[in-house]
Image (cartoon, rainbow, N blue to C red; front, side, top):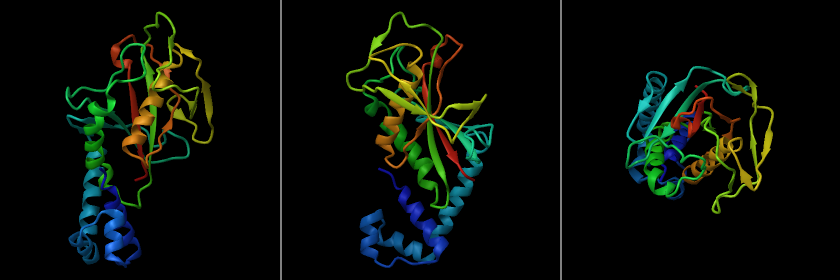
Amino acid sequence: MLRWVRAIFCSAAMLTGSAVANAQEARDAIYLTPEEIQDIRSGSACKSALRQVLALQEKMSGVGIETDYYSLKIIPTDELVRGHKGKYYAVALKDARRKQRLYFPSGRYVIRKFDNRFKASFSAFARDVLAKFGGGLDYKFYVRGSASAVPMRRSLKLAKDFKIHGIDFLPKAAEGVYDGNRRSSLDIPPRYGNEELPYLRAAFLKRAVEQFVPFAQPTILESEVSQSRSRKQQFAEFLLFVEW
C-alpha cells in the first residue's frame, strides 16, 4: 500500500552517494522498477524527491491540508512533547464515503466497519504526506482521545473485539506540554466510564494506525474529558511530529 520506502531509499542514496549494487534485489525489496533505479542512479529521482519535501513542508506549515479524506493543521508549538523539538500537526481522518470527520458514538470507543470507512483515508494521507518524506527526516506519531462532558448514564462492558486492561501514556508536564521522558499507566476495569473513555478511544485509533501504517507505532498522550458537551468532543486524533 505504501511507497514511502522509495523516498527513504532515495534519501539514503543522496547522503551516501552510493548506487544500487544489486538491481534485482533492490527491486524485490523496495518495489522499484528498473526505470526508477536508473532515475536514482542519475540523481533525477532524488532531486525530484527533495523538491517534493520542500513543497510539502511549505504547505504543511502554512494553512495546512484539507481534503475529502483527512485534514492536517499545524499545532502552534515547537515542543509539544518535551525532548522532541520540531513541527507538530493534528491529523483528523474523515469517513471516506461521508467526507466527515471521525467521531465516536456516544459512550463508545469502537467504530464498526472502521477498515471499510477509513482505509481510503489512511491511504490518501500516506500517499500525500508520508510517501514524500525522505530517510533523513525524523518523524513520530502520537494519538490522543477525547470525550464530551455529557456523563454516561451507566458504565459499560468492554467491547468483545477490543478488550484492553491497561493503557500506557505520556503524562502532561504542564498545560499543553507532555513529558517525553516519563510514562504513566491507566488500569481499565471490566466496566468503563467517562474517565476511561478518552484513553480507550486513543487506544482504538492507535491500533488502527498500526494496522494501516505498520512502521508508525504511535504513542498515546494523556487524554481527557472535555468541558464541552458537544458531540464534536467525541473523537480521537493522531498527531504527526516532524523534525524539520
